[in-house]
Length: 164
Image (tube, rainbow, N blue to C red):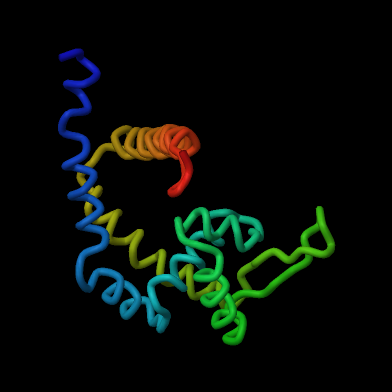
């Protein structure tokens, strides 16, 4: 076995363990309750995506980042818009299109929620050195970017269902 295979052999189980930990039972509900947020998980996911993007996004981009289909996002957006948590704004590159942006109310909601979750991460990493915390962020970003590129390449080279 080559050294690269040796280094990645235990990666999948650890990634699955991390996914399970972050998605387990009442974790979202506990964070939402602590933040005083009454939204379903997919709605909060949209708010976190918009907050991380730091600029308004198209519906399709939100769907891509959530790895869901557009209609699922549109339903959530309609509900969030009725509650004045998000708003649709003109796309400066295409006046016919609309982008999705957080309202001040939506920004306050996502700030409260992320403060709770960030607090959990800070507590978990409190004993880590500043260098280790910086390296973790750098390496997680690199892994996410490289894995996204790799999986997009795999998906692009795989025929769609029903194609030969």
